[in-house]
Length: 268
Image 1 (spheres, rainbow, N blue to C red):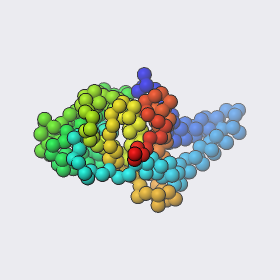
Image 2 (cartoon, rainbow, N blue to C red):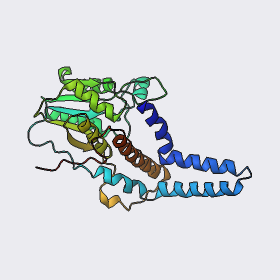
Image 3 (tube, helix red, strand yellow):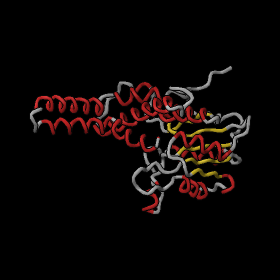
Image 4 (tube, one colour):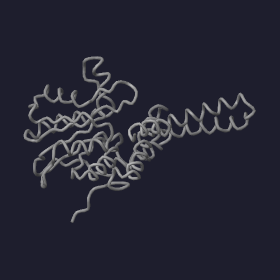
C-alpha cells in the first residue's frame, strides 16, 4: 500500500507535474464562466514554470541534501561489505535491448565496480527490485549481478536483493539477507541527494552503515545562485529535490526513518 500511494501521490507532488496540472486547469477554466479565475491560475502556472525551470531553486533545494554527508572515505580498515542501492539501471529498457541501459545515477554502478576491484575480499550487495507501478516488474539486481561477473567479480562475493521497491525495503530486506555482525564495516553507495533518507532507513532497520555518496549533481554551494540555461534541466533538478524532501518527511511521519533529516553521527 505504501509503495502504491508513494507512486501515485509522488506523481502529483513533483513540480513539473503539479505546474502542468495547474496550467491545464487554468486553460480549461478559460472556456467557462470562471474565465477570470482561469486566467489567474494559468498565469500562476506559467510563473511557477519559469521559476522552477530557470532560477536556481532546484540547486537551492538539492544542496542541503547533497552536502549533508561528506564524500565517502574508503580509507582505513577494508570494508566487510559494500551495499549499492538500485535506481541507476533501467531494467525494462535493458531487458528489451539486451544491453545495459543506465540513467542519470550511473555513478552508483561505476563506483560499485571500482570498489569491488579495490576491495577483493568485500561482499558486494546490490539491492534493487522494480519500482515500476504499471508495467510488468523487471528487477535491477540480476542485471547488476551479471555486470559484476563480467568485470571479474566472483559470484561467491555477490549478494543480490531483488524484491525491494522502496528505500525502506532496501534497508530491511538487505539486513535480513546479509545478517551483519557487530564490528563489521559496511559502506552504503547511493546518490548524494538520496543519502539522508537512505541512512535514516538503514538506521531504522538496525543496520549501521557508512555513507559513501556519489552522483552529486552540483559542484557545491557555489551553485546555489546558478540559474539554468534550459527549462527542462531546471525542472528536472527541482523535481529530484522536491521528491527527496517529500520522501524524507513521509519516511519520518510513517516511522520508516530514524529521524527527520539524518546526518553523520557525532563523534564520541
